[in-house]
Length: 228
Image (cartoon, rainbow, N blue to C red):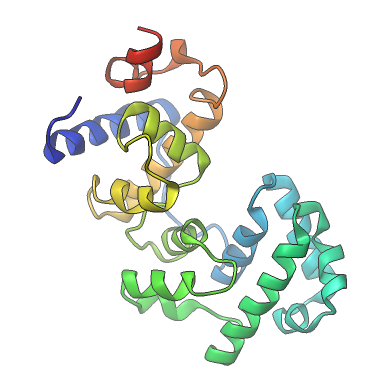
């Protein structure tokens, strides 16, 4: 068990090195434009990537512009994104977020965040209806290469089992704790996020983790307590 913060930082970098070696390294470059990333991530909560993509495509097909999405009858937007689960929650949040962005910025565009200090950008995004810390950090890291650490269910589970964060640390708190254990380098944070995500999907699964395939067993708290 790491006794100091320096020990924990060293352990975190060891986890990073081993998981990146296992799952591969990826270049950090925008996968889609910022408004697409924001709204897609809002749609992604508690659904699959396929359902998220289907809902987004249908919404854009029906309404075309972001202004049209904002102004659409709520029941029609709910119907358009119904495959994404909880459309009755997501639809009004999307419309309220679009209304706020267009009202403040004059258009559906959040590119100004590129030149906004990280903490200020994070605070602004999380003030939008339906936008939590996970959505905000994904947008800031993926689109604007800001030094933040997105934490989804897989990242959270792996981090807790290995012992990088405590058993009672929630995903919101984990964002800051994990970010502070790594260099303030977007590329490193991005690849750590991706490596933990893949590890949680393929090996450190929720039920019956495949520890025999894991390169972290010698430094994993959960393994030492349950399977060693």
